[in-house]
Image (cartoon, rainbow, N blue to C red; front, top):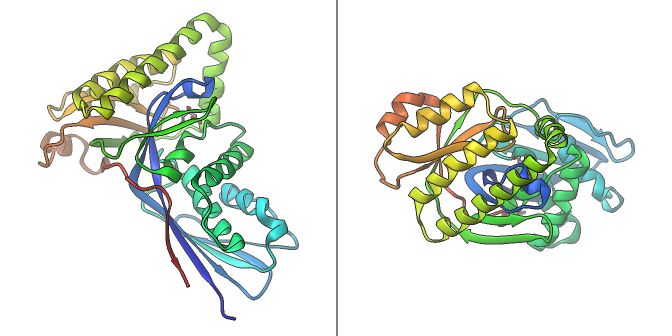
Length: 320
Ligand code: MEV
């Protein structure tokens, strides 16, 4: 028998509402976006595991002396979960529409994609979305030490999701939402930002408790507004949420400047940080005009990324 290939495409994601509070079991809203990461797995006739990527230097390990190393720690930890079932080597090729540092949920996406092809190959069937969600969330938590799993849910299920960790809620609220994202030029590791927020939380527990509850309120209001296609209300809620991000201590001068520049554009209903903060992206809810956003283009030139919601989550594209 010749070698066999499996290929999947997985959308990146943006947190819209509920960052940090989601780790305290509050509501969040997350969206799968139309920037995709693709992984293909091709079986080999030896016991090597080769990882080739468009963004990083390739890496090789073997089934008999399996090692986990950066920058492929999410991919290799996903593979490690399946090692007892793997009887032959394979090549994994990764390519992505977006760089890994811009806050589009690349760690979650690459984990979902790797587990998607492994399930497909080793069980000879595509996994149920919920199964894949649990597998990928546990890998992300193993590697990162924490993670709400909201980004994983978006990459698996697609669309705009209402999300809660406990009790688990993954509920699609819309397939659409006109957005813009601007990369701030900087990334601080999520785990470091979360640790900083949690240090402050220890100092001011009552205040942080209240902040998380207001963020929850914001996310719930935003879910209703998104369901009802009330984009200007979504924008206003983004502005309120941005104030709460500031209160959590995850805003900085660059992000604030981007947020205010975005808000100065007539096409923008509101703007906030997306993700853990202190870096990553700023997002805005934009008018669905179909026209080019002239002022936006002038202000942000190349850094502007028009983002649409990806209605689908993981897509299983081909098996030879
Ligand atoms: C990061 O995008 C959002 C956080 O809430 C962490 C998480 O949800 O895993 C800070």
